[in-house]
Amino acid sequence: MSTAQPELTRKLTLEALERVPDGAGGFVESWSVLGTLWAEVKAGTGKETEEEFLTLSTVPYRITVRSAPPGAASRPKADQRFREGSRVFRILAVADADVRGRYLTCFTREEEVSA
Image 1: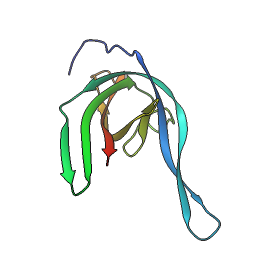
Image 2 (image 1 turned 45 degrees about the vertical axis):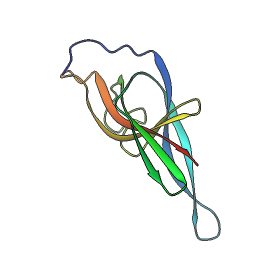
Image 3 (image 1 turned 180 degrees about the vertical axis):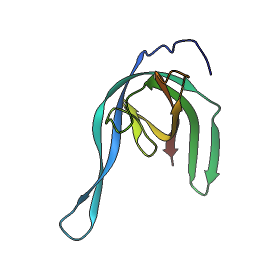
Image 4 (image 1 turned 135 degrees about the vertical axis):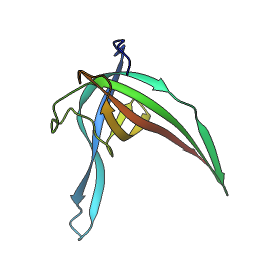
């Protein structure tokens, strides 16, 4: 693990998926804002998958944020997402970024679908 302090220069919105009853026996899914976090965002190597009339491009990212206590709304977890304007980073996993537990590394994927 790196001892260098991350440069938290990007302002990201942390969002969680909520399922709300639609009044007709089903549910409507929407994203609710949990807060804003300053982060360091590093891109990995991307890949592209083609199917009939659709191209799916994916790029993995490592997003580092300050740690928060387990159970805190500001602590990211898998199946949540970060938003930066129109960009969305889905959180796949979260791990401690340093031995002191001051930072978290969020393994994410930015997906863009074009037809």
